[in-house]
Length: 65
Image (cartoon, rainbow, N blue to C red; front, top):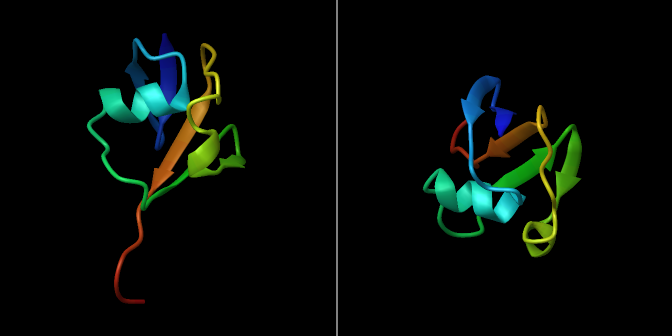
């Protein structure tokens, strides 16, 4: 399906947020995620279903200001 991830269009096989993160090579639970502007906690990613055209944001903490 076609998704927008961090502002970039891409084709993905995954139908859950957790599956998408694995497909994209994200490991660990130290980043923040949102689907269509709604925050998705780590414990809910496996149940967070994705649909065609969804906008996904994956954010990681950075040092500095």
